[in-house]
Length: 110
Image (tube, rainbow, N blue to C red; front, side):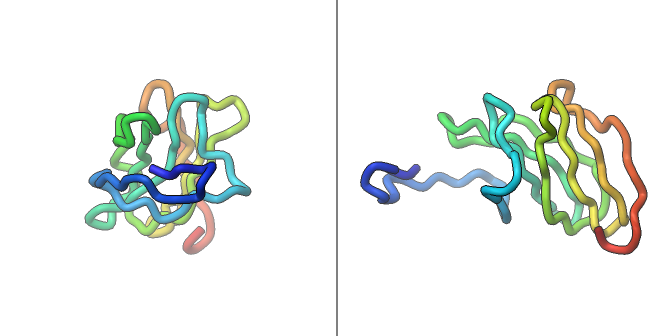
């Protein structure tokens, strides 16, 4: 937890996930949750973090072999795309239903 006005860390809490990247150049906010990815045991999963609880409140697992490098919430805020580098694909996610809409095979290590 950060006190933005004073630019100080107020508190830390474990999430049970490793958040590797949130970019100011990518959309990760769907209006209620922060979406990012994790890859425990080398398996990519999308995770939603509820900022008031500072807790993972939704997981979309089984996306494929890691690593992952980026998850972007799409403009409609209901879908997202995440790269699954170990399986050379991009997974398109339905955030509301917590499912994979489709996948797109790419070249090596997207």
